[in-house]
Length: 237
Image (cartoon, rainbow, N blue to C red; front, side, top):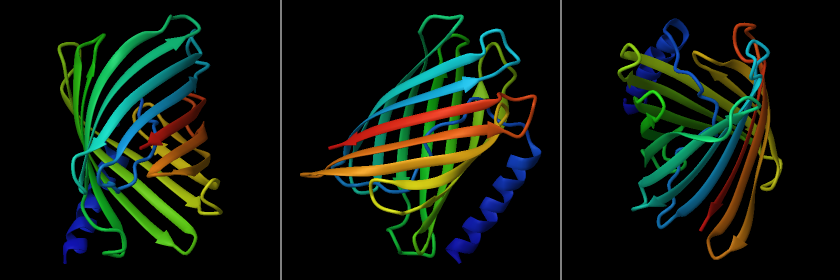
């Protein structure tokens, strides 16, 4: 019964995703629904966007964040983002707070579920974004599929307040812990792209782990950036 209600909600969200306007600049690491008790993490992410439509055709976004689990269900995270390009020097552009909640235990249902709540402030234009993301993960043998479906509200003095949607999906093959190939798809106002991804994990003992992932995305739409490269590294301790 609970899963039927959740799937009904997903159907509504996906309808919004493919019929409404979409939030921009949404390419980032795809979230899983899990929280490890007493977990601490440091994370760095780099997104390089290539766009022949603009004079500054390569833009880089750097994000560094720190997260801490306060129990076995909640993970809180603070992040700082900055951008630079061939035309602009590095500049801090956004601050972000995230709270991830693990809804179900691994294997408790047919799918594993989580929720992510985000507050972000873009410093240049004084734009605030409040978002919530439904995280769904499903295993088929050695394959894992993950979807992040986001509903966000943007407000600020320089824009019209609006409700926006985002979709990020990943299918990966669990070849071995240190190397898992896959494919990712992102859809938003500024992105409609798909491409190969690679990820892995290295364990050092004592609960210390290093996670890495990268993806190269190619656009379906000539009105959007030509291609995007994403790299993410996370140290859990």
